[in-house]
Image 1 (tube, rainbow, N blue to C red):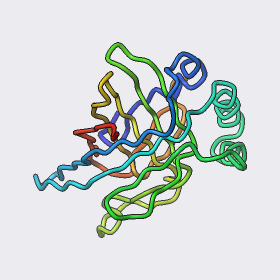
Image 2 (image 1 turned 45 degrees about the vertical axis):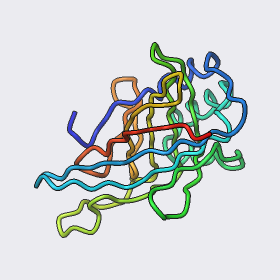
Image 3 (image 1 turned 180 degrees about the vertical axis):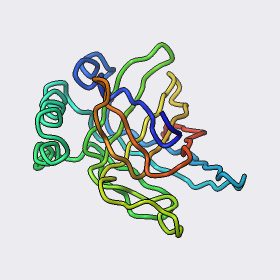
Image 4 (image 1 turned 120 degrees about the vertical axis):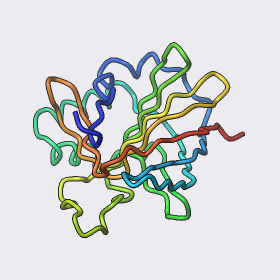
Length: 187
């Protein structure tokens, strides 16, 4: 698996959402996104993640079934008409609606996986050797949150979602991972 490809736990979409703790209303998290280029330069940006609702288990199973049977096009049709689950915002850009939000318990607290149905940003997309943008139609956030609302994670602001060896895999457009640090739940 290359640096642009990360396995995600979307496979737990089918089995993990029913046991997640119920949130008592919308949650807002702030984080710092950091990327280090191959040349050693580092850039950071603030990220705001809002979780308005989590994806219920039956809805999640229907979305996975649509994706397995008909790929990205079928998943997009299944998402049509479903209310957003929140949003993801990088720096001063407009928020991008989240369409799937999974909330699963972990030994340290909980794991939130947030998926948008459009890319947020094509990191490196303006470079002369940039790869084509076609097919990178999603963004995926994974953050692990402890009981105090603090954590860390990753953000793939432009990603392909596919199935490999029976598991869902995110193929990130960027060549370097975008890490989320200082994740904190806002009061």
